[in-house]
Length: 329
Image (cartoon, rainbow, N blue to C red):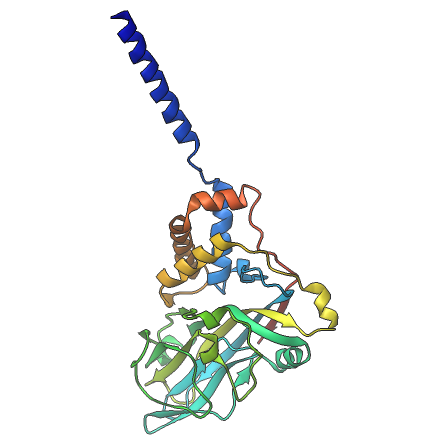
């Protein structure tokens, strides 16, 4: 009997040792690293947050690149019939297209508008190729409470509109859309990649070619109906973050650097962009709260343990470089 008891004790000891060994092998994510990855994911998915400044897609681009952040604010004024139509897309340096509405048909203008003439000049002189990192538009009604009749439609589509293209208005046929009145209800829209071309470098666009279709990013059609005639009813804040390949032998090449690869961040950012909606009520912090929640969920879906092992408590390394920043009023 003594021998049998000894045998049981040994088996119990062996079992206990095995359990301890198994627990020790389970990777535990480091909180600081998890927070760093969430911040990195937000920097790639929310164009309006501060973390987006200097962001680049971490796929280990072999050529040095330069982050480029640019903003443009435009006042949206209705025509004599209280209507307006405009298209926004993540082209660089040309990002939006105005048009006219006649008999319920919107016709695009003959050329696209750049972020500014300075941005267009800089791009021509320095840019060899470019790809969007994130892009979005904040739409903020500004009409007074007694002069805010009418409504607006924000409609997301794949690709962009060619010069002099036509659209039936009002219309929500096609992609995702949101409809709201003009009584001081702000709305934000974030463009989303939907194909492999979104991460490819393309030649910069010009006033007659916006390249949104080739870049595989969604665009936004804005329609305003039933508003006061010839009235400034809203402002649009256009925000773009891009990654630029500088022309060879250009003095700015010294500021560019290669992007270290980060597969965890890329995977989590892809999951977050898929799960996020395109439209958000409000701007700024309200948008960030949605993006941050999606980024945290995406982190665990992508594998928090792997993230902790790769980044550690020291933070993340997205390979930030000096950032070109231009604000256009």
